[in-house]
Image (cartoon, rainbow, N blue to C red):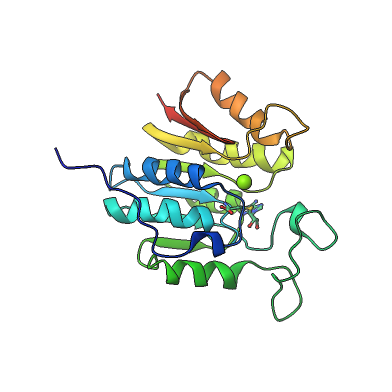
Length: 208
Ligand code: SAH
Ligand code: MG
């Protein structure tokens, strides 16, 4: 038996803006290394590429491909005046955009050949996606409508033995918004998934 791939970060990941702990990143990396190389992975919500690096390195190790879906215009909470707005992330026209930062992260991490950036909304991409997916990571918009649409658009495309990863699962509203945990509960209640990983606010479920 060959050894499972180990995580070796080619960049200073703390310098990449984003919302993910290192422990969560390691769990995403490991999850991606368990993918069958023919099964693509889909990330919904890349921001500046923090989670993309961990998932992408896992895909690189197994020669699979990561589709990183983000319109790069930010979620509600990233817009000017909102709590998570970062004034450093504006494009030439003065609009919020994480695209340039995301592309810099990908290139610096040597992931241009592994990650396919998809510049549109998750539901738009799901409408043209045809094949079963090995791993879906949901970390896009956190309104209930957005999170439910991501789940409904993608959960049915995950193949048996594939993984559904959900970020920002908080049991109480004092810790964070309740949309991701609502999706997590729906997935559990469907009877189609079982939980295999729980680290910080990340949950990873296996499609039965
Ligand atoms: N995974 C990132 C954080 C993602 S933040 C990290 O590791 O740091 C959420 C991202 O989801 C934002 O970049 C936003 O532009 C994107 N987003 C919000 N709604 C979306 C949608 N409907 N489709 C695709 N991306 C979306
Ligand atoms: Mg998140």
